[in-house]
Length: 245
Image (tube, rainbow, N blue to C red; front, side):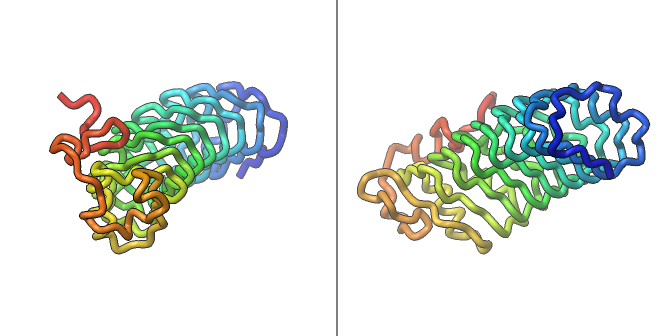
């Protein structure tokens, strides 16, 4: 183990961890002025099981930064300033079980953001600024049991995106500005069939449903709309696939 947390580290040379091939845990957390990392910072740390990068002021993560970390099980990225994550950023993390991304400024989740995370068990995304989730964003997460999306800016979420999570047991969606219109029907239908633990989804609109829990509504309570809208074709988290041919 190498613990370097709560220092004033603002820069890490690319060769700093060369020679640490047997290192299993690296804690760089709470170095608030770190802000950026080179793509080869962790090169050669193939035995690393836990990597702590929480509260480091990170603004972005370069492609390839986690390349070769196939033994990593715990990745702590919470409480940074991340706004965007590249597709396939985590693709080498074949054994990752816990991914902590809460307390950042993420605003969207694209189709291949979590590709390769086939054994991920826990994904924490609460307290971000999420407005949009691609309907295939969770397509590789077949073993995920815990998903936290509370305290974001989601107005809708595709039921198809959650249908990709057959092992899900704990889902938290509270404190989002849910629009309980016709585009909420796929999510309402998925929640009706979900047998795990979930939270209240309080409607903010339309006015007649404000304050109601989406899960407690009847199908006829949801406003009717045109055929195109009913298929969930909204821009934010709708059933339409971004970039589809």
